[in-house]
Image (tube, rainbow, N blue to C red; front, top):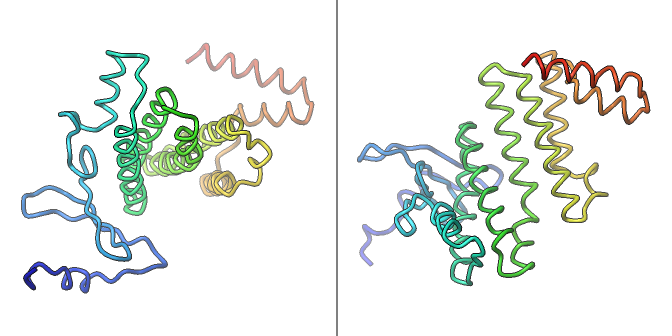
Length: 245
């Protein structure tokens, strides 16, 4: 290997910082944007469009797109070992790009990549060759939902829609609770770190933007406190709003 193939000058110009996520968005000489992540032993480079590695599996934008096409042709499709490996590759690639988008505060892109991962998880759950492989992914569903909820809420704030931000967080908490119930982790929900972080974000946004509690939140509190008359009034108000909308 000749000396001009070494990466010393690139790595030296961008030191690794263990305490932070080092990410940058660059434009190449060909005009396309790429994301770079500085990791312990080098640099990862990700495409911003399509699959992070820039490949087109079987001519499709992503492996998920290809698999969904196969699913149409064979609804009872069960993925084989080689496909499982390729699916896991796509999971890892989208994880790296999702956290990079969050670090770059490109929240719409983070939501899009989280949605891709969740859709891939849904496919795996439906067509998995075994329960163990399914659980390898499902145990991370709450983490992906957390990222999506966080990004969607901050995107809503950027668009000056604080009420939508609260709604996104509440929806995320609901989906995480469903996931915990499916996994048999119900007792861990209230003390889970991801849940606590979403609750903290919600209350911070509520305080910063003077956002009142939604009718759904007030209804849940009324039912929990056994204030059934108030709960009935809130249901009536929600029904009227649904009709008017």
